[in-house]
Amino acid sequence: MANDIIAAVYENGVFRPLQAPSDLAEHQEVRLYRVVAPTKGQVVAAIERLQPEQLAELWEVICAWLDAAPSPLYRIHESAIATGVTDLANQHDHYLYGTDKRRSSPPA
Image 1 (cartoon, helix red, strand yellow):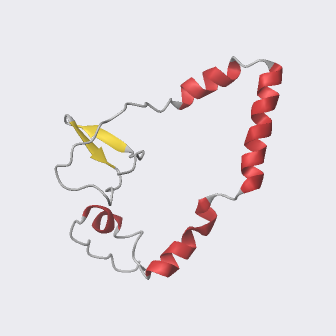
Image 2 (cartoon, rainbow, N blue to C red):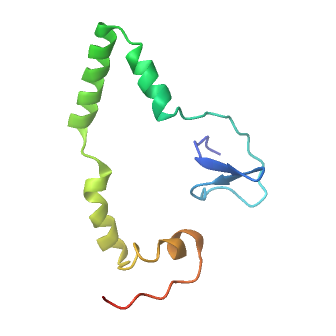
């Protein structure tokens, strides 16, 4: 049994995972630890409170991250090719939530 971080949304008194954990059985008890992500405004305010040397150190860390690996979004096309799903953009609700597929609109 592994400890994981499972991103979830709190809706109507229930925590709904954003992605189903593959190793949990139905009705398995889990323990939740609340970690609230800061808002953009809170991050900006925290950065504005930094001393110049702290800001320089933060900038070095950010630059190192950017140099280490490109954004996964630059490789998203590889996933589309590998899965063979050609209508993911138009039918995302179907693939994410299992809803019926929408009828495609005729070309304009």
